[in-house]
Length: 290
Image 1: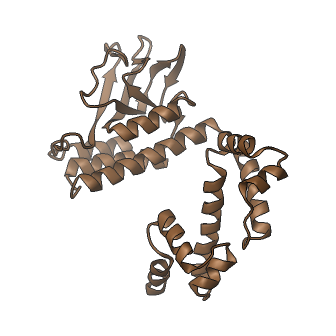
Image 2: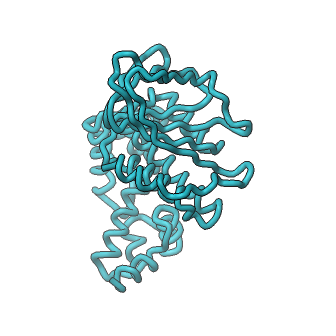
Image 3: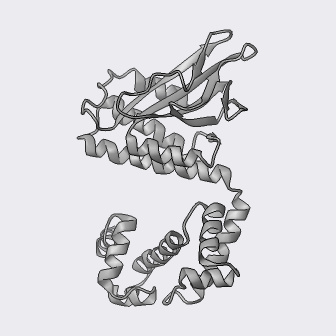
């Protein structure tokens, strides 16, 4: 299904890559290697962009190849992918005993995205399992479609889609690294404490005491186990309850703010807009219009 979609997209006359020097650039393609084809890439020998490093995302559609990094080697077969940085000490190639290798790839040239992905790869080998319905695969195909058709109005719209892809890639790396059972255990413990009194959410120090840990130790462990900071998780959980209250109750914004530990509607609106991109009032208006 993905291969067919990609073939249709790639037959469209391709728009030139972003022409704005120093701004994000996206390159992509689909490659099908046949048995015994010579194919070998060394991440240290590849010529990088003259402006900044590149992020490489490669997702296998069929067949398989080998990816190595830090003296480890992985078989990248169907529904597996790897994310890496160029230049860096890695290789990927088609071995002699492979029947072939078909994959889709993205190359992102953006200094901030490269920096963020490079930080994520310090804790992860970069190899991830993704099915066709995985958010990262869907966003990757959508990026190709938007770029191929030239649908970005300007560089700012393009950059927002690239940042969205970056966050999705970071989540995929984190979920691959952290067993879901351990992650859920930590999240549920903190969720239980917060929901005991939503109007007075605990401080990080109070949460740490419940775990018999110092603030710094608790923050570090929580981030390692869940991929989130405690403060970010508390904020997300509170705002999720706010969103539910906007949908399911007729309370005004000041009442909802007090119910979930915000000083007033103004503080709630600022936090809500940072998380959802719209104000509580705008969301409620949309819901009523529906």
